[in-house]
Image 1 (spheres, rainbow, N blue to C red):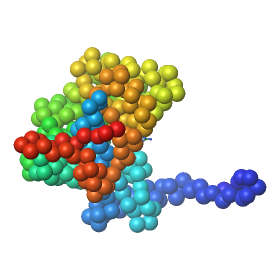
Image 2 (cartoon, protein in one colour; image 1 turned 90 degrees about the horizontal axis):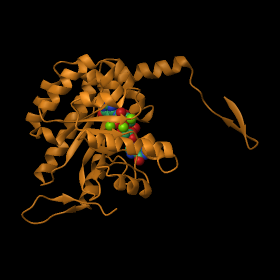
Image 3 (cartoon, rainbow, N blue to C red; image 1 turned 30 degrees about the vertical axis):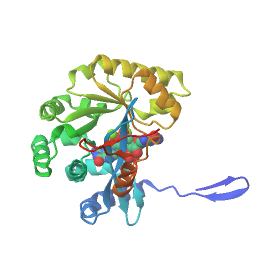
Image 4 (cartoon, rainbow, N blue to C red; image 1 turned 135 degrees about the vertical axis):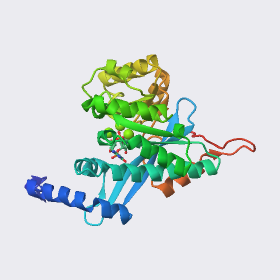
Length: 291
Ligand code: C2E
Ligand code: MG
Ligand code: MG
Ligand code: MG
């Protein structure tokens, strides 16, 4: 593709359908080996309570450093991995890494939770809850320190199959969150039917709320709805002080976003936490932000 910008010729590269298909095919066939070769890793993004700004835990976000394509974001490879029937391997890789993280914090006296994103395909596996229990027991993490995040469209695409599994996970004491809330086309009423503890307001509304009164209204009504249903309300995409202040004023419970921190590699997360941890003799350590 050629275009002219300010008199200068710009050469862009637009892959053909065949090339897109080939790349996707490569990703799918290489994924298992990539897991074994250590190309896939988990980054973690902190979540803080409002208004007191304690670090409650982190969200696990998968990354793939591909030898040919470079750093790949999950939006590119997770759908391909799902379609190829490999989501179980991805989810359990992320889950095990995440649980080991929580275990090592507990050993240091820090009680923080981890949230793992699920795919709807995980809920098509009737053995999924049993496998999760096995991992929790083996790594020795209490279930209440694990959260699973699911998108509303994911759950609603096949509720008859997803609901019994969600109920089982919930009965185990695992925390369940509806991710990207507000983007699906399902009504707010269905939230009542789901065995969930948290709702995460989609970042598009949080990012827009400073300039768009419509987004602000959506955020406010999700906070109110969530609270009236007894749910914890989490805002993702908190990039600005103003957004945090507005969310705090509305009574939103938890904030996550670049203002607090970007997703961090394991090493960088440890340094980030260390700099913010307060240890009082005879008590659990606490990680508090001065934002
Ligand atoms: P998500 O679960 O809604 O995760 C939030 C996404 O928003 C992350 O993108 C995160 O990096 C980004 N984000 C966080 N704070 C901000 C902010 O302040 N501003 C902006 N603009 N963005 C922010 P990421 O890591 O690229 O992940 C994209 C999606 O991929 C996730 O959306 C999740 O649906 C999926 N995903 C990530 N890891 C996994 C995984 O292990 N398993 C599955 N099944 N899906 C995953
Ligand atoms: Mg999520
Ligand atoms: Mg989200
Ligand atoms: Mg998302």
